[in-house]
Length: 375
Image 1: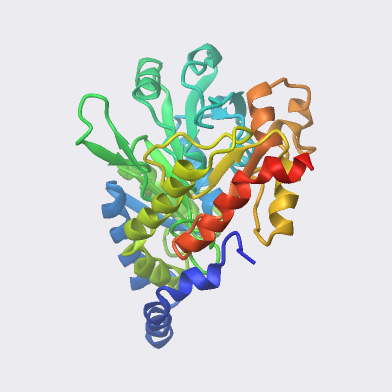
Image 2: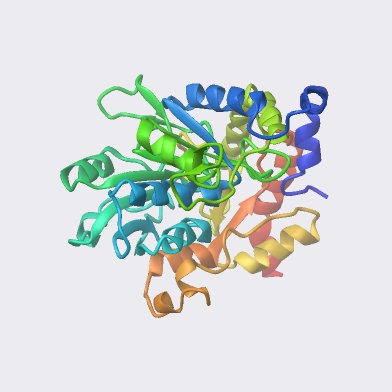
């Protein structure tokens, strides 16, 4: 069986260092808001290229706290609109509606699966206050056109970087000037769910920003609304990264770029060698390939075929947000590009512990798919 994402096998690559990190936390006797968290926040801020990093409990909290902090700062208020890609994972939209803001769903581009920047400006209304881009599947969603739109219309630019740790954006003016996702907008949310490129051994997340006031408010709200013990400036919540997760993440951060390179090598091998006209593979890019998505009109048959031959795959995601029961107000929207992606997308195994032999097996199966189903 070729598993989609064998987490133990991936973590075993750094087993000794991870165990040592846990032991240091246990020996310290300090398990929340301690030195391990402070060190990781500093390391990750430096890696991303932001002034501040605030550890929180998970990626959804990171998104929610950013929006809540902007409400406290007077930059957002209830009923304001936030433009967001229609094909994102539900967490992105949950963070908006939890803050009583209104998500405006914009279609992605079928070639990249990222928000179509040519459609953003027409979605802006007098109530629009922010654009939330999502670097889906590990590919950079930011474009200079999006940056210009936000600047021209005085809109906040918020990044959901849950799937793109280590991804870079190269400006058109100078390809040598690269900026990491998570430092392209006003603030960014990061998830360290175990399956991410930079994954903890439980839930964890972070906010990165250059805005000192925003960073202070996010940290305070995530600590019950307190910046000083027993003094509460905000009606906060409990959203903190624990010391064990921080220590684990500091270890794995050292290997993130190398792990991403391995993902790229597997992805490139797929792209160069899958030659089946019924399958649409990603266009080569600077993606960190958190997910390797392909499109197939016979997606369900393809998934079963691969499973029958010992290959585990995942669908990201079978039901688009606007068709979910929790958002009945969106159920009648017509979003054909989003609907096509959700009906045809299938994710192949692509991770740093994967062997070339495993990739070759999958490539051969994909190339034989039509033959197998024409009999």
